[in-house]
Image: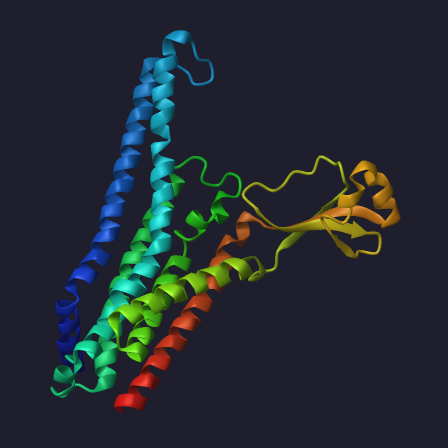
Length: 324
C-alpha cells in the first residue's frame, strides 16, 4: 500500500516538471550518441588512412595532404572529450539551478503546494517526493554519462599521459565526483527554494553556491589524501612520474627542514653558494600518482554527499518550522 501511495506524489512531480526531467534524461543519451559516433568515425578514418599506404612518421610529398587530413580528423575525439568534460562540470549546476530550485520554489511562490497538502499529503511527504524523483533521474543520468565519458577516454590513446587524469575536465567527468556534485547541488537548490520561496532568487543562490563549492574543493583537493614525496639531488636526471600531478616542491636541508622553491631565487648567479649557505642537500617533490585518483574521488564524493545530507536535513527542518 505504501508503494502505491507514493506513486501519486511522484507522478505529480514528473508531470509538473517533466521538461527539466526530460532534458536530464536526454543529455546522456545524446552525449553517448556523439561519443560513440565520433569514435566510430575516428576508427573509420584510421582504417582508411592505413589503406593509403602513407605514414605519419615517414611522410613523402605525395602523402602530405593525406597525412594532414588524417591528423586533423584524429583531433576530433580529443575535442569531443574536452567538451564532454565541460558538460559534466556544468551539469551539477544545471541540476541545482533549473531542476531543484524551481521544483520547490515555484510551488511555494505560486501557492500550488496548498492543493497537494489539502489532499491528505503531509508537507514531509510532499518534500520527499520533490527530492526523490529528481534525485533518481539525476543519479541515473550522471552515472550513465560519467561511465560513457570514462569509456570514451579509454579509446583515446593519450588519456593517461601527462597530468591529463587530474585536469578539471577529466577529473570532473569521471568517477564518483560528478554524482556527488549533482546530488549536492540538487539538495542545495531545494534548500534555497524552500528558504527563499522565490524561483529566481533560488536559482541565483544555487549558482553562487555551486561556484563557491567548486572553488573551495579545487583549492583543498590535493590535501584530501596524503601525497607521495620524492627527493633527488639538484641537477639529477629525476623524471616526474607519468600521469601524476604536482602538489608542491622545494628544497631540503641536511636536517630535513623544508624550504620553499624560491629559497635561492635571489642567488641565481651563485646557486651553489646559496645551497651551501642554507645547508640545502636535496630537492623534494610532492605529488599524487595515478593510483591516488580513486581515493581522492571517493573522499571528495563523501564530502559532497555529507553536504547534500546536511542540506536535506536543513530543508526538512525549515519545512517543519514553518509548516509543521
